[in-house]
Amino acid sequence: MEPLELLECSPPLAREPLNAEQAAGVAQVFKALGDPVRLRILSIVASHAGGEVCVCDITGAFDVSQPTISHHLKVLKEVGLLVSERRASWVYYRLVPEALSELSALLNVPATV
Amino acid sequence: MEPLELLECSPPLAREPLNAEQAAGVAQVFKALGDPVRLRILSIVASHAGGEVCVCDITGAFDVSQPTISHHLKVLKEVGLLVSERRASWVYYRLVPEALSELSALLNVPATV
DNA sequence: TCCTCGCATAGATGACTGTCGATGTCAGTC
DNA sequence: GACTGACATCGACAGTCATCTATGCGAGGA
Image 1 (cartoon, protein in one colour):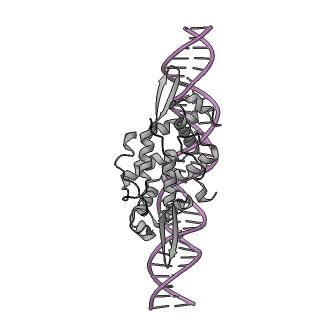
Image 2 (cartoon, chains in turn red, cyan, green, purple):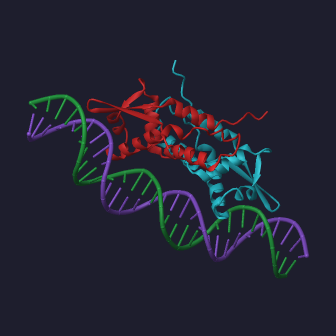
Image 3 (cartoon, helix red, strand yellow):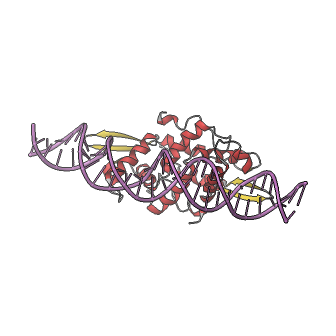
């Protein structure tokens, strides 16, 4: 399944029960968020002025090895939360705001009137 | 850490980088959402008219065993997404709307003006 | 009291995953 | 071309997890 499709066609959790296929796609994205290091990476990228971050800026912020950071970046990219672009020797990662918006919409719960 | 504290004191991902402690708490909640069965369970409870669901109503909706469902319910309860109450022979689970709201706020990304 | 039903807990197991060191690849430099 | 630096990939390993069967526990009924 394409990364962008993981969250498509899934209604808010509180509107109707998710079917197995929808749940599988959404779970993949949440699973990517279910690791402290990945959450911090995403937060660094999302909050960075300019919108993009070089991998070297991320690696320095953690106690884990460079291959581990690379692995986590790959996971976040595969589920569609990040995109990357190589310029010269460096690789820059950017947030996909729509992905977070879709997730946020999924979690939306109607006000208890 | 208390379930209710897992999401406390964590700014939106896009506002500032999460520290290790915040990330650990938030990741625990997202990890709970990172399983298709748990997502469907949560969706069943959240979308059910009346707001609460008997365990027996959940078990019947899946191909997995009753202990497995019980395990997933426990995970969702431990991170503060669900609460349970026993009445007579049955146990009823209810959604904690505030938990979903907090998560939704975490994922909020400022509009690109 | 014993039985049945609804649900939770315990223990086991196969699969997955986060992490590492080693190595490969790509781009720029000497 | 050879070297260096930035990043990705590979293979291995220890820890975690989803699932199962078997069993325990509370509540109601015969």
